[in-house]
Structures are given as structure tokens and as C-alpha cells.
Amino acid sequence: MLPRDQRREVEDRAVREILRRARDLLRHTSRPRETHRDAFPAEGELDLDSTLERPRPWGPQDIAVARTELRRADVVAILDMSLSMTGDKVALTALACAILHLKLDRLAVVHFDTKAHRLVSLSERISEDELVRRILRVPAQGFTNIDAGLRMGLELLRASGLKERAGILMTDGVANVGGNPLRPAARYPRLHVVQVGEDEAQGSRACAAMARAGRGRHYRAELYADLPAVVRRLVRESFGS
Image (cartoon, rainbow, N blue to C red):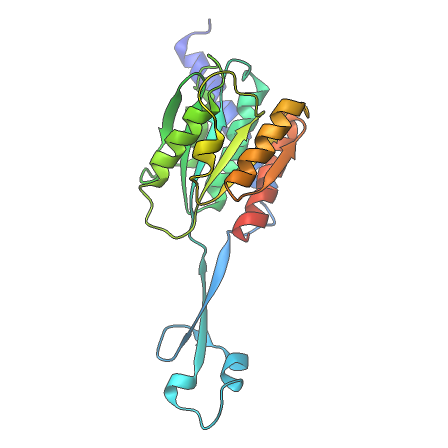
């Protein structure tokens, strides 16, 4: 085993490389935004088209204004970190989460093996490099309890007061311990599922069913190397980036 200072140096290099790749993937994208329309004297720019559609004569209340703000959503990432998650798989999962952290307003993170573990709560403001470090330090161990991961994700989302809340589950879909994951999946306001790995029949059926139960989208990353790009597409399509 490497001495502690050398292990830290290796970790620092890995964190820098993961964040460099995350920012490269997001170089030509912006954070999700949404437009709010209101009437004068509310704050905003003149919305000329909407104003012209209103019947004359115009009063002050007929002047339409619009303002563009960052789209607010609370999201929990639920990560399958069971025994098979080693080496590049962990680094690519950290890269996918760095993309979420850079693009979304607030991000909580749960990882699961035989049990579920909270990594980041919604109220916790951490940097991208701290998030990546925490994921890289998660030990690959135990079985695959998707049910437990989804239940803990729900617990973290309860702290949200926002209208838009969602879970993003990253897994191969093959659970070998725990209860039926469809039950907690159906309790999410929205649950998107990224199926990672080979298109194994059991996992594919389970991932598609969880996404349907959670009124979300089912994505496929055939290789772990595809995961960051798939997560970037998920944010664009589901959160308006």
C-alpha cells in the first residue's frame, strides 16, 4: 500500500482529471434556465409580443414583462456502488455526478450496496472536487439493494420545498437483495433511470419498469465510458439545459 501522502497525491490527480473532463463535456452548454412572465410593475424586460396581444386601450397592468432565471430543481443521485464497482467505473460515476453538480441548482447523493448510505444532503453545499473525492473514497462492497437506495433518496428529497424534484438512479438494474424497488420508485415526483452496462434482460426490464413507475425516462449507457455523456443528455432533456 502506498504511503498516505502518495495516496493523497494520486487522489488529487484523479480529481483534477475528472473535473477537467466534466468541464470539457459542458464547455458549450449553459445551466438550465426558465422564463417567467408577469405584468408591470413586476421586475423584468418588456415582453412586446404579449403586450401587443392584449386589447386596447392599454393600462399599466396590460404591460407584459418577462424575466429569465436559473431553473430551480432539487435532485438526488442514487448510485449503485456494490462489489463490482471498481477502478474506472467509480471514476466515471464520479464524472457523471460532477456534471450533475455543475449543471443543477442543488444535488443530494446516495450510494448503495447491501445498505444505503447518504453521501451528500440537499442542504449541504460542497464543491465539485469534494463531491468527486467522496465518491472516489466509497468502497466497492456488498450486494445490490436498489430498494434501499431509492428509499433513502426519497428521505433526502423530503427536505426540498421546491415544486420540481427528481431522482436519478444509475444502476445495471439487477438487484439481489432488498424489497421490490418499484414501490419506492412510484413515490418519486419524477425518477429517471440510467441503465449502465450490458443489455441484460432482467436489468433492462427492471430499469424500464422503475422509470415508468416514477414517471421518468429510461436511459441506456452500454459502457461505463458512455455514462457521462448520457447524464449530460439527461440533464438537457429533462431539466431544460
